[in-house]
Length: 259
Image (cartoon, rainbow, N blue to C red):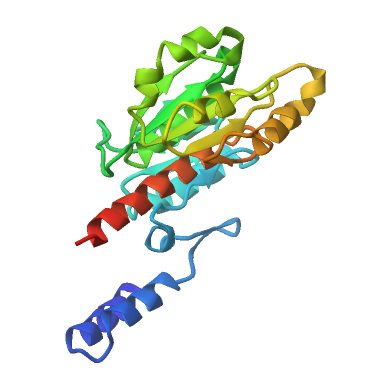
């Protein structure tokens, strides 16, 4: 749908020939914008899901990431690419001078500075150990770029449980908690037993051989005896943040609809 077609559609809404909801359905079904022969950008994803499309940077050439970001920047206030290494970032920066890089999270973004909070509710990010920080930071930066208030609580794993217990007051400030842990992955169960908020558990691939690259903590989290835990894939900090964001946005929607 080009601008002329969109203008015609909006004119039909204005004259009452098409209901607003029917027009929205048509707009939501607009397919994509091709970028070269290697990408198709879904500009309408935010209409359907509440969040715009995000670029998976790993395994893409930096030049491809640049072209996709350039095509997206005029349609989105925040353009984000995940799993971008330092070498790829340097190539991207040479073409896009206003791109920002979050090295620990491995995220590139074109975004307002400073970022604004656009949604109510707070996401708390909790990491078991320092080695889990790249995944935890991916979750934290993703949440901030999506317009949520985020706080971080690092290195409070079960090997020194007193560190977590001394910060229970922080845990209670969050409406959703993302708990990132490797090794045996017990931390989400402990946290879920202390709070009344949903817990998104993110297993990491950190651990000795018997952790099987994150499979052991994944199974621990799936088998948790604590309630209110949702589990995402191994090392998927981005997915954890998106799930937490959807939970908060659902609450926001319900608040608007309540009398």
